[in-house]
Length: 242
Image (cartoon, rainbow, N blue to C red; front, side, top):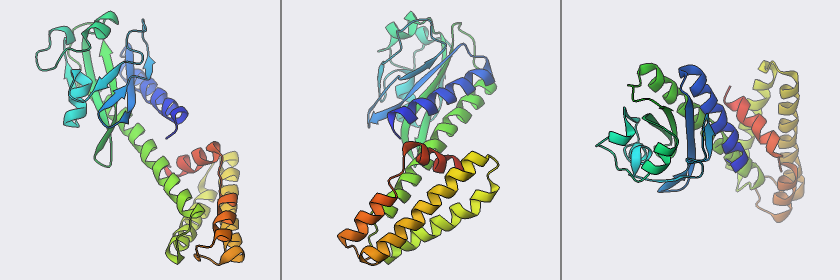
C-alpha cells in the first residue's frame, strides 16, 4: 500500500474502533521495517506525545503484541509488570492508563498494530477486544487485497509466457462477471473501464509481439495499456473486497 492508502485505511479502522467501543483514543501504524513501526494515525489525542513514536518489536505493550502476534492489554500501563517501559513518558503524557494492542497480521507476518485506550485504570471488556480485532482484520483485508491487485497488474504489464496471459484472461473474466453486481453506477463504470484496458493490453501484446512471446513490443504495449491510476487500483481493491 502507498503511504496515502495506509493513512486512509488506518484512520477508518481507528474511527470504527472508537465508535464501536466508546474508547476516547485509538492509534496505530504499519511496519515499514521488519522490527519497528511508527505511530502514524491517532484519533482522539489530547497531545502530540504519541505522534511519530517508533515502537520496536518486544518493547512496550505494542512491541509485545508484535512479538507474540496476538492481542495484549494492561489495566494500568504505568504499573504493569509484564511489559517493558521504554515508552512511559509518551504514554503518561497522553494520560493513558488502560491500553490494548492488536496486531495486524497478513500471511502470518505482523504488518502493524492498532491500539485503544482509556484514561482511567479500568478493565477492558470483551466488547473492546472484539472491536479492536475486527478493526485490525479490516486493515489486514485491505492490505491483502491491494497486494493481490498489484500482483495481477504486474502479471498484466509483464507477461512472462502463455500461463501468465491465461491468468490475465481469468482475472478479466472474473471482474467482468462482478461488474453487473456492483450497485454503485460510477463504480461499475470504472470497473468496466479497467476490464476494457486489460483486454486492450492483451490485444496489443498479441499484435505487438505475440501473446507471451516476451518481446519488447509486447511488454511496451501491455505496460502502456495497464498503467492504472491510483483511484483505479482502489476500485479494483474495493470490488475484490466485496
